[in-house]
Amino acid sequence: MADEQFYMQQALQEARKAAEAGEVPVGAVVVCRDRIIARAHNLTETLNDVTAHAEMQAITAAANALGGKYLTDCTLYVTVEPCVMCAGAIAWSQMGKLVFGAVDEKRGYRRYAPQALHPKTEVVTGVKAEECAQLMKDFFKKKR
Amino acid sequence: MADEQFYMQQALQEARKAAEAGEVPVGAVVVCRDRIIARAHNLTETLNDVTAHAEMQAITAAANALGGKYLTDCTLYVTVEPCVMCAGAIAWSQMGKLVFGAVDEKRGYRRYAPQALHPKTEVVTGVKAEECAQLMKDFFKKKR
Image 1: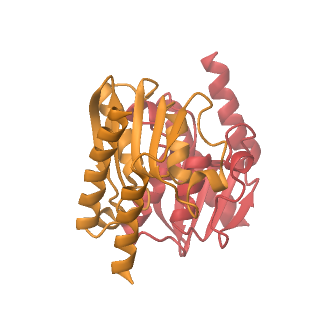
Image 2: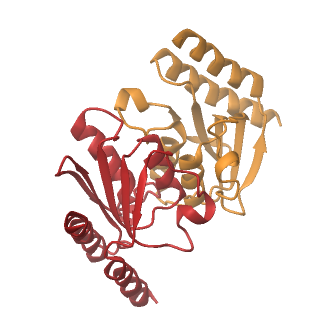
């Protein structure tokens, strides 16, 4: 539990970098055997690319770090519930565990594709949920 | 209709490149106002990256070619029904039209997330379906 708080804090730091860059503030880290092997934040505006979500980049970077494309021994921490695209990527990677902070009722994978993840992927929700959600709320309030 | 056949033939050429490289043979092209603006094939093994599906790369390349991340005036041709991840990316890109060849009963988005696409995206299926499916069958037969 203390670990989950710590790693989500790291994902939150990534999310804040996204906010500072004018990006929807979502951050992610991938942890393998108590080490952070990838950090990423949303870059869709900067890269002009809808596929550049934090999770997608974190998965690519983690596979690169490990030299293998399956992440069965890894945990992905992400500040907001992944979308359908990212859930699909998490499934293909055979991610061991997914921990997310805030739920996303509107765009989260659980609304559109509740069976999208690999059946063996353990899911933990609600870690630092309020802090993760507050970052999103602050961002969209400023946008209006 | 003749156009659809032509562009799917181009996607099939990409799929054959994938097969030659030992990749699951899926190819894609993005067409905007009668011009092919992106071509891609599956590179998950070569890049060691589960996110490197043909469609994902084609979407990234098309946005790059257009200088904008929304592909509302574009059509994506892909030899096989997209997976959940790719359907999510197609949705985020607001792709105008999706044309695919062979269905994928097992991994296709329609099984897990039939509502994943943007509601405005037109979908056409079955273009050169047999040829697209045969490439996949031949590939997996060799693998066994």
